[in-house]
Structures are given as C-alpha cells and as structure tokens.
Image (cartoon, rainbow, N blue to C red):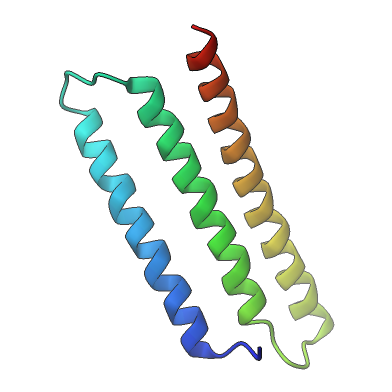
Length: 103
C-alpha cells in the first residue's frame, strides 16, 4: 500500500469522531449523577490514546518523500511525542481499570 493524502483525510475523520465523543463525555461528566466515574475516565484515556496513535499513523502517511535533515528531525520528534502520549494515556487507563477491578 502506498499511502495517499486521502488516507490522511480518513485518519483525520477518525480523530474528529474521537474528539467529538470525548467532548460528549466531558459534557456528561459535568452533569451528575455519574454512575461509573472511573470507567468514564478510563474510556476517556483509551480514546485519547487512540487519537494519539491515529496521529502517529497520520504522521507516517504524510512523511515527506525526500525530507531534508531538519524535516527528518521534526518528523521523528512528532512521532516520539505522539507515541508517548498514546502510551501514557493507555497506561493511565490500565491503572484506572485495575483500581476499579480491585475495588
């Protein structure tokens, strides 16, 4: 598969859908009662992780064909930051779920 700009657009659509869902969850969290606050937080962290991983995919899809050294550094810096965000959010979700399960 050779990635195309339309692939990036599909990824962007998925990220928008995730952000819309996160916004709805935030709105719902502001209006008690919340029956499962820890589970809602875990869902939010999982969705944040998914959006960050989609960002990694988008960065890879849009990689310049013949990047300059500066573009290469920026590209890898973006990948590292997006991957760290995804990993941290997934880890936080796992901690929340482990705590809910043992409670």
